[in-house]
Image (tube, rainbow, N blue to C red; front, side, top):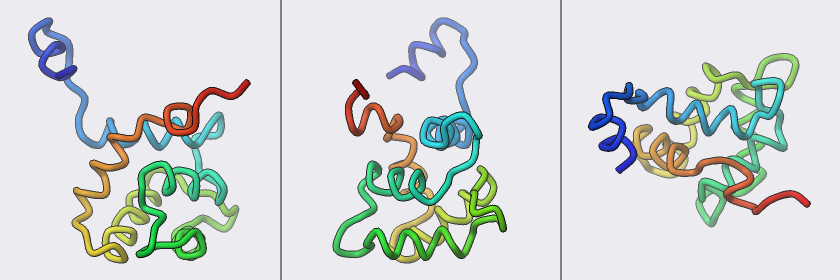
Length: 113
């Protein structure tokens, strides 16, 4: 619906990549990269942690794609999305849609007081 309103009012429409990156940056905080805790939080909020994929599985995925500094940027996260899709038997586009639909940690866990 928001895209339709933007179209009607002549606002530029975000690309699919820009949308999932918004969620990525919402979880990454100030440094624009995910650490292990933020990555697992994102996976949990998006509904990926269940019987098919445990937090330990998410941690293994993170270890396979992270930089030596134990951080993942947007490019590495795109690789993680492909690994999550493979593990869950989904298409990467489905994983990215689930990420896009999750607006961030505050929306998933409520406000921090």
